[in-house]
Length: 110
Length: 122
Image 1 (cartoon, each protein chain N blue to C red):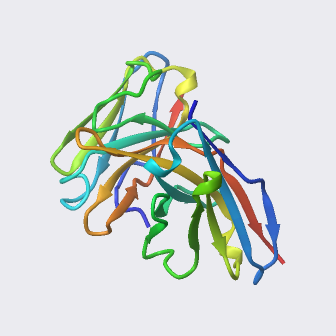
Image 2: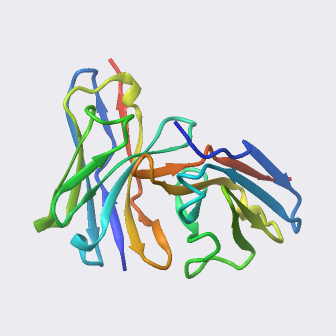
């Protein structure tokens, strides 16, 4: 069961900006950092954003993250066809003493 | 180069047992937790639990407690996930992921295995 809530889908045309929201609670997003993962079709998830807004080496700066209170968001600027994937937010949950993932958002490039 | 390489796909019958593996390389295996994540067909990611290779301590999500067992053999840099009695509902892809933790940036799954597809069918 997912504890973090995301919209099921988001879409945009090439070059547009798309944002994905992630809603949690005080025990997870409210008190811990948020990570984002990208899962391309048929592949394993990949770390996209960590610690709310940090990009691992190799991740384009078109991707950015932010957090406020018990919510977080991922923005994709200059949408490209290769960005078509599922995106998941995640955070440590102090009540569960474990990780929780978001419900996932499928991004479609029109 | 950090790599997590998982064992191959499995097809099992209900009631059978199974043990899948995740071998780490390119880093100090005992310095990072290994997490296991389930992805059922067409569904999202679910955290199953984690194991600390330095002392073999495992912690499970309540959803998986008592149904799976995590273990590790640090002499061969390998973590394991096992079932004693599979059910059809265990059909899924199982991923292992390395968990990095530091004071400034918190926890994150920074490297993932390629996934192991487990199919349970009579």
